Amino acid sequence: MPKILIIEDEAAIRRVLVKILSEESITYTVDEAEDGLKGIEILKKEDYDLVLCDIKMPKMDGVEVLEACKKIKPEIPFIMISGHGDLDTAVNTMRLGAFDYISKPPDLNRLLTAVRNALDKKELVVENTILKKKVSKNYEMVGESDAINVINDMIEKVAPTDARVLITGSNGTGKELVAHWIHEKSFRNMAPFIEVNCAAIPSELIESELFGHVKGAFTSAIKDRAGKFEAADNGTIFLDEIGDMSLSAQAKVLRALQESKISRVGSDKDIKVNVRIVAATNKDLKLEIEEGRFREDLYHRLAVILIKVPSLNDRREDIPLLIDYFSKKIALEQGTATKSFSVKAISLLKVYDWTGNIRELRNVVERLIILGKPEIDADDVILFANK
Image (cartoon, rainbow, N blue to C red; front, side, top):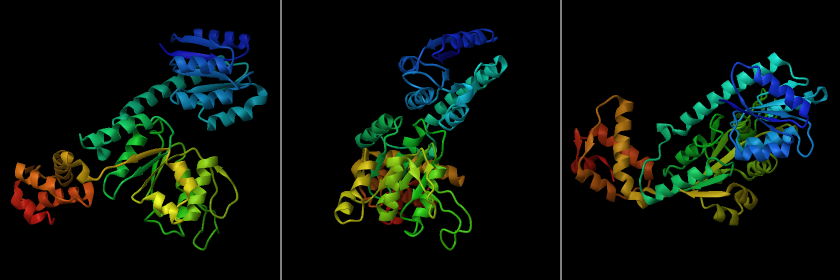
């Protein structure tokens, strides 16, 4: 039975809403709150499928209630109730995440249609959230070592929040996988996950890539173009290798963090963005700060949560699991039979110095599968691993 909360300071309007809902063929459980503060208090304790919320109320208005609830339980749809003079505000609440708005006095058919549609959407969101939380196999974190278990525990705690995360570790350790897990297990997982490799973009283009540009901002800017921050609105932007970002771009990223605003290159118009930032680097940012290549204030903004991804040499007990995972994945990708690895082959691979970490191990496994015998043994490893 769907549960609906009505937050409305006028008792007469609450009675009308309850009466309309009681005439629906579906039976609803309806609770009431006479002001915004009471509504928030109830929402913290109880789960609801829908909230009907007035905009103009004493103590706490409907916009504030909506914004607060989206932080507590973002999956709950809101239908805003607006007076004639509140229509502009009602439209603005749609941008803030409200599902719909109803004018006073509420029309029976209009309200019931909005309620049905909102409840249908809520059901879809819940289903998709459950599916999304089963993280894509492409981004599976393989391992049972203590180091990996610590990271998994941190992801479970951090992902449902909006806390910014800085992921550190050597090249090839799997920093990107951690970023994907954080997004997939967050409440933003229905929105985009936008990746930016800061090291791969020339310094003169990084600002345009991140923040977009307007026509004529520079020679090749033949039309307006949105940047990665706009593309990631309501979702997550992953700034990989952020230690390679120019100081001027760092200043703009800092502003985006402080004010939730960006401006395209060549424009003085502010654009509001709601983006969670996850960053990664293989550099020692504290050393970069000392040498004047990285802003200390940006570092402290990014490093709310620090996750250090261990090298493969620090989690050798995971190597047999990784070999099995990669061999099955590669066989599936290539449409070939899975090859097994002998105990001696695995033992030999476990003692190698994996300077390239997991990325290097995957390459070696692929090479062995292509060139090795049906059961890969120590001789194949010595011959083809190139270690």
